[in-house]
Length: 131
Image (tube, rainbow, N blue to C red):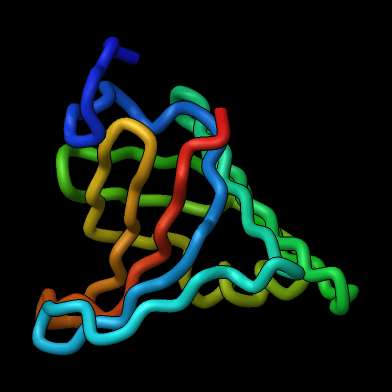
């Protein structure tokens, strides 16, 4: 990763460990609501050169949520193709393997933004770099 002095400097890749900090909801492509993470809930994403893995932990819930696959990004577009996951996630993967997001990436933060079929922003997951 290149040496950067400001939050707006762009890293060369997503490689590393990231933790979900909150969500934004959008209307007409503008943030209309935001939510911080519940302290009892954690979601971590890890990116290597070509692989992505994520997991969720909720202290009061024994259900498992994780996924593993490949990813690529080019500027403002992130594509994750999941190969397998937890039992619940495998059901999702059976219906949809490829997940495409708008990506806003800075040195220690990123947002993966879900778009509707017209390209309008719906919501984002907001992450901070852990490592």
